[in-house]
Amino acid sequence: MLFNSLSFLIFLPTIFILYWLLSKKKLWVQNLLLLIASYVFYGWWDWRFLSLIFLSTLVDYISGIEISKANTAKRKKIWLWVSMLFNLGMLGFFKYFNFFAQSWAEAFSQLGFSVHPWTLNVILPVGISFYTFQTMSYSIDIYKGKIEPTKDFIGFAAFVSFFPQLVAGPIERASNLLPQILKKRSFSFDESVKGIQLILWGMFKKVVIADSIAQIVDKAYGGFAEFSGMALAIATVGFAFQIFCDFSGYSDMAIGIAKLFGVQLMTNFDFPYLARNIGEFWRKWHISLSTWFRDYVYIPLGGSRVKRNRAIFNIFVVFLVSGLWHGANWTFIVWGSIHAAFFLPSFLIGSNRKYNSYLVQVKKLLPGGNDIVNILITFLLVSFAWIFFRADSINNALSIFEKIVLFKDGKQLPYLFNEVLAYIITFGVFFLLGILFLYERSGVIRLNVKHNFLVSISLLLFITLFGRFDEQSFIYFQF
Image: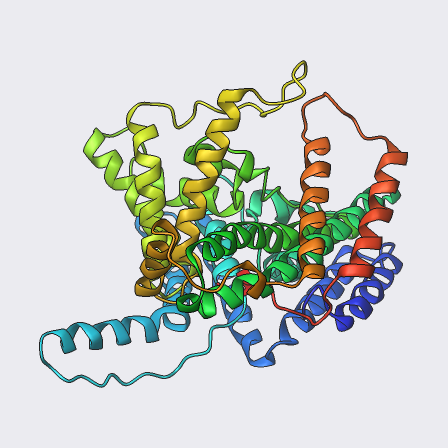
C-alpha cells in the first residue's frame, strides 16, 4: 500500500479512529490493532511476504531472550549468530542471489567458458533491507548489554512491523521505538497537527516535485544516447532533487503518520544539500542508515582509532557495503566507492567533522561566500555520484558522464519537458527551498502558528493543483 494511494487515504483515518477508541483498553489490545494494521498494510503488495517478516520477528524475539539469559559468552554469541545468519541469509537470498549468479556467469564467460546459471528470478520483498536491519540491531544491542529483551511478543512484533516506517525507514533502533510501543500512549492534538503538517510536506515533495521531475529524468536516462550533454546535466541535477524529495518525502510522511499514533521516529534527513563537505553530507543524508553502519560496522571494525591504513580500509568497507545495501547492481557498488574516494581527503586532513553546526547562525541570515562555494562543490560531487546510482549499468553511466563533460550534441531541453511542467517544477523547487530555509533551526526565524497554517494551506493547494496521483512508487521501495 502506497502513502500516495486512494487505499491508504481510506486505511489511515480508519486505523487512526479505531486506535484511539482502544486507548482506554489494555495496551496489548491497542498494540494488536497496530500489528494487524501493519500486516494488512504490508500484505497489500503480496501477502506471501508476510511469512518473511513474521519469521524475522520470531527469530529475533527468541534470540533476544536467549542472549539475555545465556550464562556463558559462547552461548550468547551462538544466539547472536542465529539472528545475524538468519536475517543476512534471508536478505542475501532474496536480494542478491540472482545478482551474484549472473556475475559469476559473466566472469566465466570472459575466460571462454559458457556458463548458464540456474536462477530463481527471485522477487525482492518490499522493505526487506529495512526491517532486517532493524531486528538485527535489536539482537546486537542485547548482546552488548545496551538494552533488555522484551517478553511481550505482540509489542515486539508491532515494533518490527510498525507500518509508517516499515518499507522505507527510518531504520529505528529498539532503544528508541520499542519503549514507546511497550508503554501507554495518549492522544496529543498538538502532535497530531504537527503530524498532518509533515504528511503534507512529504506528499508535496513526492507528488508535486519528485514525480514531476521523474518524467524528465526517466526520459533523459532512458534515451541518453539521443540527448545533449547539457540536457543530461540538467536531468542529473533534476535526479538529485527527485531522489531527495522522493525519499525525504517518504520519511516526512512516516514521521508525521507516527505522530498521529503517539510515536516519535528519528529524523532521517537534515538539509543534506546544504552540506559543506561529503562528511557533513553523510551526517545529514539517510541518517538512520549511516548511523547504523557507523555503530554496527565501522566502529566494530576499529573505526578511526586504528592505524591509518586500517582506518582507510574501514572507510571503504562501510561505503562499499552501503552501496551494496542499496541494490544488487555494480552501479551501486561504484556509487559507494565514489563517495569513499570523495570522503577520504577530508578524513586524511582531519576536516571530515569540521562542520557540525547549522549553516545559518543566529546573527547571520545568509551563509558566507566560503560556505556557498563549499555547498556548490559538495552538491556537484554528490550529483556526479548520482549518475552511477541512477544509470542502468556502469557503461551507461560512463557514457552519460562523457556526454556531459564533452558537451556532446543531441536533443536539447525542450524535448525533455513541456512549458507547463517546467513552471510546476521551477516554482515547486523554489517554494520548497524557500520554506526549508525559513525552517532552518537557527534561531533567526521562528514560524508561528499562523505562518505554519499558511504554509500548510499553500502545500495543500500545490498538491491539489499540481500533484500527480498516478500512484508512482517511492524510489527506496526497491531497496
